Length: 205
Image (cartoon, rainbow, N blue to C red):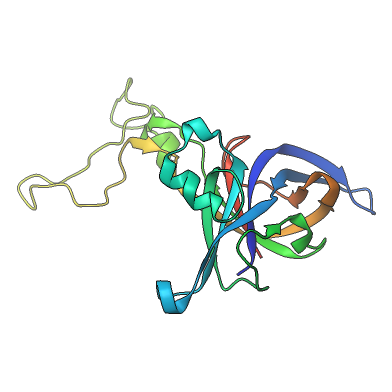
């Protein structure tokens, strides 16, 4: 599956040929350098390792500097492997946004925004008591009863309760590519994608 590493720039909207306003996300996709070529004989599987976004050498380990030097490039901040790449690539090749075409569909993976510790109303969509039953007056956003009494005398695993929300790996599938701006390495994709602005994303064909 071919793909690129990118950075989410932000959201905007454009008008199509019928005058309809379409919300879209702008992604800086690549250019990415092939930093390693995995082979079945050596590694047991075939894949391409791509690196994106230059990293200061003084902030890199010597092992990382040596690894990227084999590909003739500087250390990278983000490294991702892509299996079953559509085209054959060699170590040190540069892959840019031109591998995508307008109108095709892609999958975008990113880390969703972290929302901290949240209650059951925000985290799971509980409706709250609503001051409607049992004379409750200060329990509007409480989860209510979570377990039985004498039997089974415990709370079942998977009970929807308050906890940390967000910060998960999320993949959104079948997003249409609206525009490819090759000279600026920009990809305009219909709809929204996970993550905050300037966060890394993985775009797969």
